[in-house]
Length: 292
Image (cartoon, rainbow, N blue to C red; front, side, top):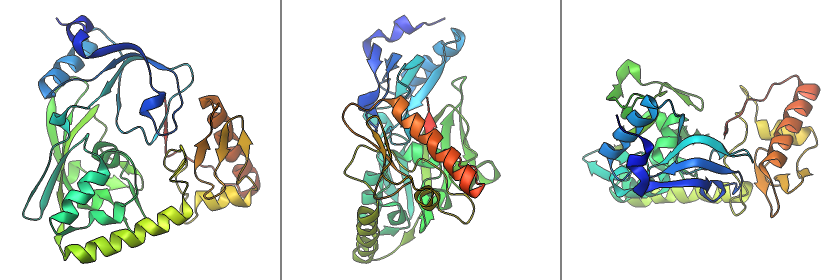
């Protein structure tokens, strides 16, 4: 029976998590562990299960708010090259879960494959994008995914395909502990035309979203047929600040963190937006980000 002591070479204790998230907020992880390959990852997951130690996976950190008190147990980051491999064969593209979504998009575009350019400007990793079915008005990643290789909390590997792989609005059927790799079926197109479409989407996002600030992705899911940002703006909350956190004055479904901000400031803004929107419009906003 292995223990966390077996992974001391890749373990940091009481490691602050703020620098690993887009909001740059939050307390430490009791253990932050970065396995060097899949075999070490599996052994780590099994050891945590045997010792009944809670485990979380932290990807690009673009969709996570870590509480100020931090996280107990093990936080795993997949930073090794073994988890970032990207390949293209014909119209089929594969990407490790730790590959940046932006780099995977660029790789597919250079290969003359269309589809993923609709995700331009979305932060984070391929794994995080798959789990939350990242996307926008022009489409989402799930419509191109044909297989997703995963690891369970017991360290068992299997691949979701067909009916076992489904996607909805910012949701997926992928509920295993860890995503290892995604396989995608794309379409051939002229690379210059793909780049043109991608640049157009990117320009639109830069004009409407606070991409240069410390912010996560959208805070709330859009209720059916309504934009969450529009509801928050109509509630008079655009530009509202608590402590060092602010509801963006460019897009009200983003919260930006300024120097001196704390996670609790963001949580209070989230509660404020929810209560005001429910009070004025009778709509219950659901979180799109994860709160640890």
